[in-house]
Length: 324
Image (cartoon, rainbow, N blue to C red; front, side, top):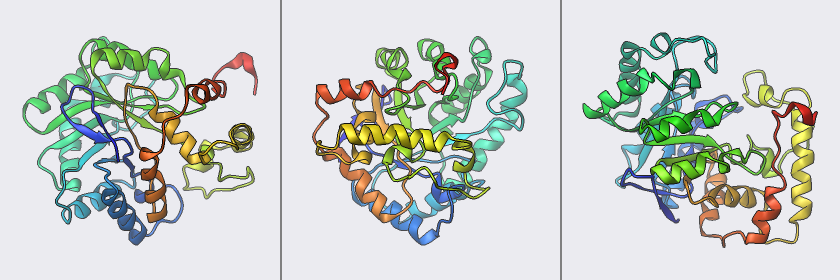
C-alpha cells in the first residue's frame, strides 16, 4: 500500500481507504461477519483510513467500526459525517444555516459520533452536505473550528453536494476547511477544472468518493438489474440511468480491453491520478473486495496516453443541451 499526504494536516493516509456505507445498510443484505472480515482484511493490506457517517444505518456503520478498532493496535484514521437537521437535502438557497447546523445541534450530534466510534476526539468530521448560500457566513464551520480548538475534532471539512461541488472553492481559499470529500470518477471529472488546483494550492486534503459511480464503473452490471426499495441504488439508477451508465462503461471496457487493467482497477487508478487527491474510498463490503481494491495501489500508474483517452469519457449528466 502506498501512502499520501493528507493536505496540510500532517497525516499520511493510504491511497485506498475503506468506504463503510454498505456495512451500515442501504446496499442490500449485509452480514456482520462479512463486514468484520472486510475491515480486518483491508487493514491487513495497509489501509489506515476509514470513511463512515451518521446516516450509514443510523450509526450502525460507526458502531461496527468503533467496536472493531478496539481489537487493532495500528493507527487508523476515521472520517465521519454529520448531516444537517431534518429538511431539504441538499439544502436550498433559502435554508438558514442556523436552523440546519445550529451549535446546539452540532455539539449533540458530535457527541453521538464520539459515542458510536468509542473515541474522545474525531480524526475527521465532515458536514455531510452544504449550499453555497452559506459561504459568506459559514457559522457551522466556525462552530466546528471552535470544537476543534476544544479537542473534540482534529480536522474538519465538507462532503460536497453533487450538483454544485465547486461551492467549496471559496471555503478553501478562506481557510475554513482542512479537508473535503468530493465525487471524482471517469464520468465525473469537473473537480479537475478548479477544485483540485485550489486544493493543491491551499493544502486541502481531498477524499475521493464514488470512484465506481455507485458500482457501474466496475463493469459488473448488465443494465437489467433491479434493486430493493431500501437499496440506495434503486433511486440512483432510476429510470434508464443504469442502462445508460452500463452502455458507456462498455465503451470504456472495449477501448481498453488490451490494457493490463480490469475495469475496477482502471476506475480506481484514474481517481488516484490527480496530485491533489489524498485517498480514494471505494465501498468495501467483503473480504474479496478488500483484497481487490487495496491491491490497486501497487499497480503501475496509468500512462499519459491512457489518461488523455479516459478524459474523453467525461459525462456531464447535468448538461441540459446534451439531452440524454
